Figure 1 (spheres, helix red, strand yellow):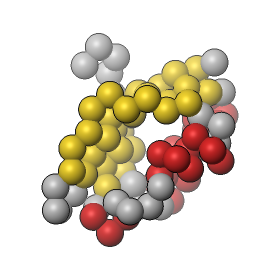
Figure 2: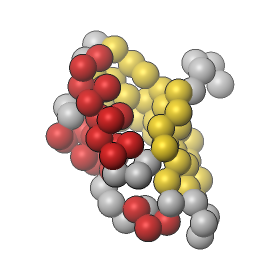
Figure 3: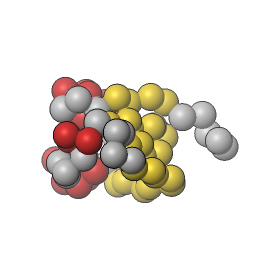
Length: 77
């Protein structure tokens, strides 16, 4: 299994959507939240994704299509 740590940044209008739940269920990924913060204007989540490379990539593409910005996070940060 592969692991990838990413930063999800989102606008308030999509904050009520179950993004992390869907990543786990639809894309068969194990998710682990390392850090998160939310304000009225935006929110972010540092998230570790574990699964096959194909499923991780598909999940990231899906999240981007929902309006989530996805950036890689260097290990150990």
